[in-house]
Image (tube, rainbow, N blue to C red; front, side):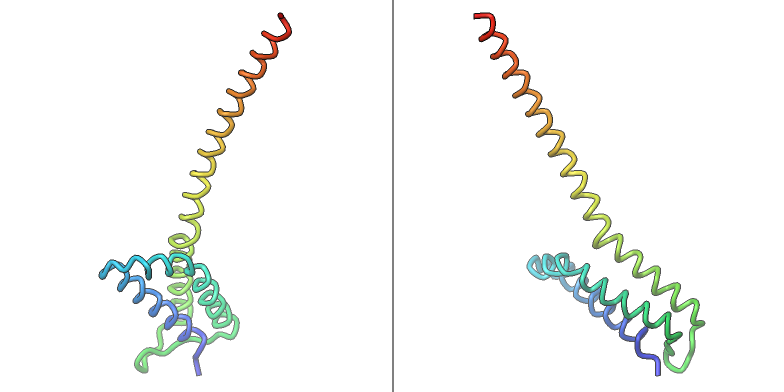
Length: 126
C-alpha cells in the first residue's frame, strides 16, 4: 500500500491550504507562524519523499496510476520550489542585508580610525 508519497502530498496540501487561508484572510499571526516553521515542514515532507523514492512507493489516484517517475519528478519540483520560496530566498535577503550592515560598520570603523590618527598626529606635534 502506497503511504509515503501520499503522506508527502497530504503534508504539502495542508501546508498550502494554510498558506492560502493566511493570504486570503490576511491573518498575520498565522502567516508569521508559517514563515517561521516552513523549513521544518519542508524537512519532514522531504524525508517522506526520500523514503517513498527509496522504497519505490508510487501513489494511485482514483484507481489510475500516474507513472512513478512522473510522480517523483513532480514531488521533487514542488519540494525544490518550496525550498527556494521558504528557505533560500529569505536566506539570500538576510545575507544581502547583513552585507550592507557590515559595509556600514566598516565605513564607521574607518572614520573612527581616521579621527584617532588625526588626533594622534595633533598630539604628537604639540
